Image (cartoon, rainbow, N blue to C red; front, side, top):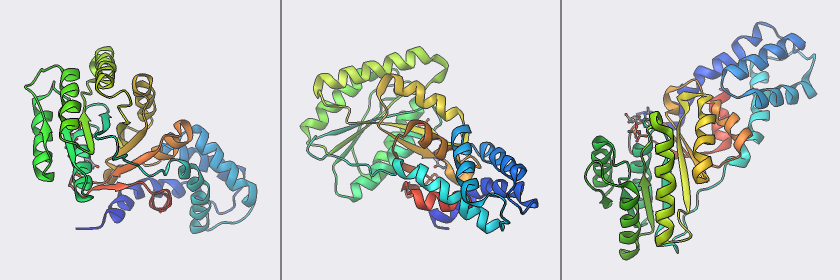
Length: 300
Ligand code: GDP
């Protein structure tokens, strides 16, 4: 089993090959090379603004110079890292909340349930008392999957029958967590994008109902994003942020995508902390986000 960093690199190298490949048939950093570079950055999902910013930064000190492939990569990294640095914030759980309520949202298939399972395991290892709530009551499979993760991590799961009222379940879960003096309660939610207004109404209602139990909750609202969706991630942030004030992002499936540049454009545009990254399907495959490592993996 390879380490997560090499898997992340392997995944992201698909973009780093693209990154310098086109530009470096040419060695001189002239106007044309810069334009090519900007195009490749945009194609790697770094977004228009970040791409322009990166190219401008590189041109400032290196315009007209002859650069090797490695020198160009280093120059790109030098520009990317400061864009990622501000979102490299450690995720803090306030154990005085009892429970620290974490609402986990995102569209179906993005990796919500898996990420919750992984986080539960991590927190459990840190001796925190964890509880999960199967708030995606619409899908029987999601409830079952969460129970499996709960068992694996050795943490209780609050669940009801399929089709149960999700806000009511969230309400019960917060109450129960208070009673059991749980440190962290992670609430899974539905993510049917086909019916956006219903989805948003339900999320809004969950937040409202949670507040009836604890006015300061939810203490975190995490948006789980599949890195593979590329620029679509932007509309997902906008959509969820409208209803719930997203406090952090988990970016998943970075082990198998050439779209890792999305972290850069998300950081530039939304400045939301990236709490963790998903680099595989297993329990160990969730890692804290590190701007330096990520940049290194991204640029190659
Ligand atoms: P949900 O619908 O948002 O709850 O998504 P799930 O947690 O059910 O995940 C959907 C699929 O993506 C599952 O097959 C997961 O095993 C897979 N998955 C989740 N995170 C990752 C990741 O970081 N890497 C890979 N390769 N697969 C992942």
